[in-house]
Amino acid sequence: MKRIILILFILFIIIYSGTIYYHLKKSLPNGMSIEGDIHQVEDVELLTDLTYKNKQNERIVEHEIVDSMIKEVQNANEFIVIDMFLFNKDTNKDQEYPRLVEKFTEVLIKKKQEMPSIDIVFLTDKINTVYGSYNSEEFNKLKDAGVKVIETDVKALRDSNPLYSGFWRMFGQWVKTGGDGHLPNLLANSAPKVTTLSYLELLNVKANHRKLVITEKSAIISSGNIHNASGYHSNIAFKVNGNIINDLLQSEESTARLNETLNLPRIKIQEESKAEVKIQILTEGKIGKHVLKEIKNTEKSDSIWIGMLYLADRKVMNEIKAAAQREVNIYLVLDPNQNSFGNKKAGLPNIPVVAELRKAQAEKYIHIKWYNTGKEQFHPKIVLIERNSENTIINGSANLTRRNLYDFNLETDIKIMASKNTKVMKDTKAYFQKLWTNDGAEFTKDVDTKSNLPLFRYIIYRLQGFLGFTTY
Image (cartoon, rainbow, N blue to C red; front, side, top):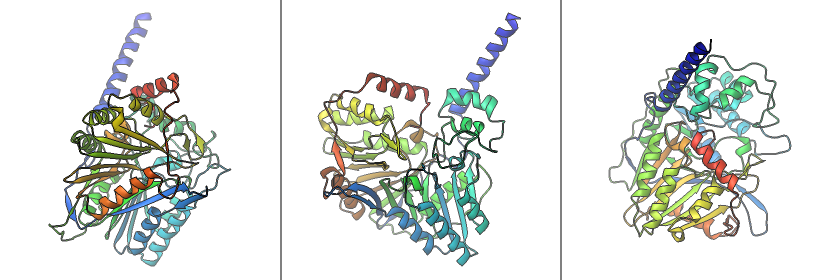
């Protein structure tokens, strides 16, 4: 009997290990992890959302991104494609937020009613219904109005949480989630209850994390969600036009194919070959490739500006340290990770990351500030690299984390390359300088260099990164 148990145990370990390895290294579905063609355009428009306290200690909220997305929807004539990670109105009962979801839903329905022939496709993540635990009122309204809603099936993606997902692949994925929930909704206490099986699927920790709106006239690639509880977050987006729209549409077709075959239209635009600004779409692992390459290629006279919700990837951190040793000046504006949708957090990963960077050999070239957050998050995912010849921006949905940079989540970023004298580069540098110098408000605050990082917090951060059992 003991021998049979031993054989079964060995067989289990072999199958479990093989499952982990395969789903960690398997090929991605077609159309994932792409670097698009480089397109030349006259310029790119920077869009920002900012929440801050002015000199009179008043809370100011400036919304530009969602308002611009709404305007693009209203101006569309041929098609609208939206891919949005978070799109729900769920909040904690004691909190009030802007009603972004209700407003955007109404705009889409009105557009479909005014132009019944226009194609509207809305891709999103299953997190909005906690993997089928309940129905989304907004999704139902959109479907009833004729909008195609696709909750992305991410099972075909690689597993970012392999030790857990190995068990899930073997035993859990065959059981259908959904049904009447009975557990508290930890994402928002006003939302419906959640089933056990939905929570078990949630623990795979992977998502369609993209945030963009595409029409035949323009595309907006953003760091921000259309999501009530995110309504006060600070974010950055870029509005582009030209044939990069076709690259984005092709990428979204590939995402839709995880669920069903979908053929999206294309546009025809004659691009200006002498235009000053070059733009390129990057998705999934190609974002990590380009971020690392751009930081690695910096020299002594260059500068790196980073505005980020999460900075945790070891490769990126090593390149930042190496750049500092080359005497590249690096400016980091980071979220302190102490609040998420009104709930307190432990400061992971950014607090231990900052403590580590402060101890780097060339620490004097690494300048760090916290964004002065309240109940909101500093949610951008932007890298600006200044060179004498050509500046580079990489911005979109991807944080500088393993999950976001290396083919686990679905992510979309835009890479912008242009002279420092172009409007988009001037505007982006001005944005960073405004935050850094606290021009007109208390946007940022200095890092407390006297406080010591608790050892247990650093251990948890490194352990989470090693095991993959984390959201970053």
